[in-house]
Amino acid sequence: MKKLVFLALAAAALGGLGAFTFLTDTPAGQAGPPRQPAGSDIAAGKVLYADVCASCHGAELQGQPNWRGQNEDGTVPAPPHDETGHTWHHGDALLFDYTKQGGQAALSARGVSGFASGMPGFGESLSDQQIWDILAFIKSTWPERIRDMQATRTEAEQAQAGL
Image 1 (spheres, rainbow, N blue to C red):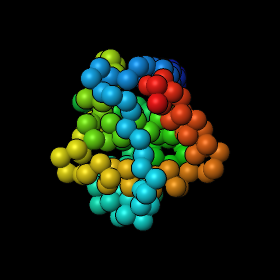
Image 2 (cartoon, rainbow, N blue to C red; image 1 turned 45 degrees about the horizontal axis):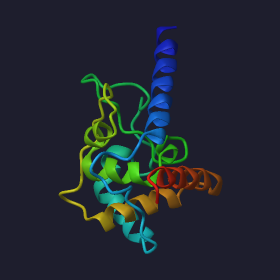
Image 3 (cartoon, rainbow, N blue to C red; image 1 turned 90 degrees about the horizontal axis):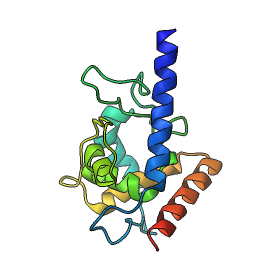
């Protein structure tokens, strides 16, 4: 029973986080959300994903076990990047910033506190284009309806930023 209550609370918290990040303003000092270039390379993204991301998020994008719970240190395990996870619940700007800056920094810039992300930033080791290529690969694995929903969230994110 306790596990069911915890899972329900964790799901509600993640849903609230998703809604908050979807509706919040562009971080101070940022001209607008980053935009995915038209020339993103899915094949290059697949190779980069295998080299950089799969160790935490899984070779099949399946995430870590118990990804809806918490690790002993309070951080959240790496979620799936396939359609069963919540990656597609976020617009491109948040996904890009989360990858480049790291989860904690990206969320803090949006005013989110009390959420312990274990996601490191890759801005020092990956170029912006490489990050976009990885995101393009991840999105290429989603069914069309999921890609459409994520694109709608990206459009809303851009509209909110005045783009």
